[in-house]
Amino acid sequence: MLVSAAELLAAEPRPVLLDVRWALGDDRGREKYLAGHLPGAVFVDLESELADPPSAEQGRHPLPSVQRLQSAARRWGIRDGDAVVAYDATGGLAAARAWWLLRWGGLRDVRLLDGGLDAWVRAAARSRAGTSGPSRGTSP
Image (cartoon, rainbow, N blue to C red; front, side):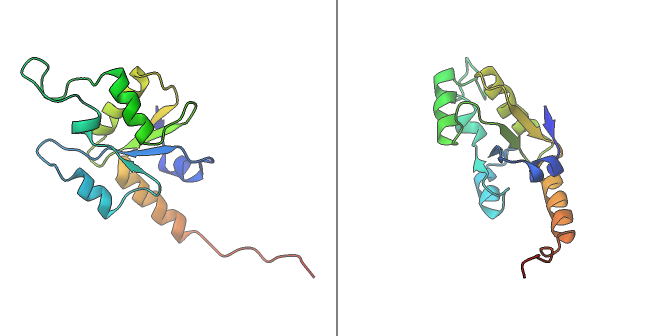
């Protein structure tokens, strides 16, 4: 269910990355995404893509229909057989909703980035710090 940032950095091919930054009372998820996200990640709006509109009968974040979820997944670039990794920056709550809904909707290879965005930032910094130039070639 979890994938480490180091595993994600090394993953080939790269899974579809879903940035699900959301927090109760904070509607700046897209703004935060635009300020910085994992390379290639797609922003997922919990309020409008991972839930149907709120109502007195259904509550604040009712489950979307399977058809609505499938339509959103297509917009995010998910194809049959793709691996998907969801992350957020608030302890995994929003990303876990994406994980659960995608599994409920029929996808099998869905994971959560262990430690979220912070774990990625730390791992990417270590990766860059340890990167050296190419080894010397053997051509004459």
